[in-house]
Length: 253
Length: 253
Image (cartoon, rainbow over all chains, first blue to last red; front, top):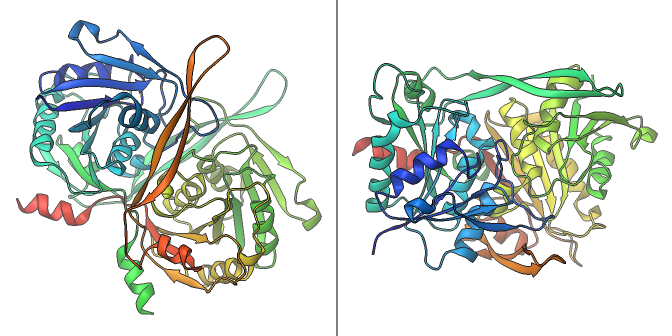
C-alpha cells in the first residue's frame, strides 16, 4: 500500500504553494488534501470553537485523481477534521504548505502553516511544514522541488521523534541553486511592529499592523543564517514548550 | 515609581477573570489594561494582518483610577498595541488572564491567554499567564488570590530568564485550600476531538468541534498531576521551540 499523505496549508486550497506540494507528494504516495477555503495567515494555532465548521469536497485536484476538501476552519482545524472525521486510515505523513512567506525564527509562533504541522504532531503523526521566503501570490517554488521530495521521503522512511515536527524554510529563488539542507536552531528575533494609524470616513481611528523582522542572533547555527546563505533551513520543533533548564533551577532553589 | 503592570486576557475586557486580576495587580503597581473587546478563546497565537485594528478607551476600571483600552484584535495584538503604541514606558510585568478554563498541558498551544504572555516574552518583557480550571462564565477565582499576588510580586522582583514565561494554572475551587505552587513540566496529552454533525435549515451539513482531554503521562512532575492534587502548577515555557536534543542527533549523523 502506498503511504498516505495528508496535505494542508494556511494560504487556502487555491494557493499556488499547495498545488506545487500536491504535485510532488502525488509522486510519493496517496494524497488527500484538507485545506482552508480562504487564506488563514497569522492565525497561529487557532481552532474554531464558537462557530460551526463546514467542509465540502472540491474537484480542484481531480485531474490527478486526488480527493480534496475545503474547510471553513483554520489549518489546525483541517488536521483535526481530516484525522478524526474524513480519513479512513492514519496518514503516514502530514505536510503543510508550501507557505508563501517565511516561517523561520519567531515567526513559527504566528504560523498557521506550522500550527497544522504541530497539530499533527500532537496527534502522533510525523509532520513537516514548508515555507518559501517569498510572500507574493505567484511566488516561485520550482527551485525547492527536489529538496521537498527528498525530505518528505526521508521522514516517511525514518519517522520523527514523538512530539517533534520539522520546520523547513527555503530561500527565495536566486541565480544559484539552493546549497542543500542545514539542520539548525530557531534564531532569536522579533517582529518590530509599527502601527499605521488612519481615520475612516466616519472619523473613527483605525490601525494597520505593519512591521519588519529584526534578528538578535549572530549565530551561524540558526535558520536565519541558513536561509541568508542560500541553504534550506530544517529546525526540529517541539510541542513541549517547557523550559527544562529553568525548571531544574526552580526545583533546586 | 511603582512598577507598571500591563494586563490583558483572551476572554475579553468584561470577563470576571480580568476584573479579578485588575483588583489584585492594583495593590502591587500601576495598572494599564489593554484587552480584547470580545472573547478570543482558542485563538492561539493569532495576529491581525488582513483587517484593521481598532481600539477605544474604556471606563470599565475607572473607579479604581485605572486606564483601560478595548481592542478589536487578538490577545497577541493587544500586547503589541500596548507596548508599541499605547504605553509611554516599558511595563515591568505583563499578566494575562485570569482565564476561565485550563491552559495546562498541550492546551497552551491553543491558548490566547498564553499567546499574550509569549508575545510579551518575544518583546523581552517578564510575563505570566493565569488560568483557573473552571470554564464557567461566573467561575470562582477568590481561592487563588494570595497565590496570584505572590507570584506576580516574585517575578517583578526576580525577573525571568530571557525567552521564558510562566504558565500558571489553578485547580477549581474545592473544600480544601490550594496546597501551594508546584513547579512542573507540561504534561503529554491531547484533546480527543469529536465532531457533532448537524444539518442547517437549508440542508447543508455543519459540524461542532467537541472533545475531551486525554492524558498520556503518568509522571508526578507534570502540570496535570499538580492540578489534580490541588496544587497551582507553574510551568516555565519557552518561545524557542527548537528540539535541541534531536538537533544534536541530526547534526552528528
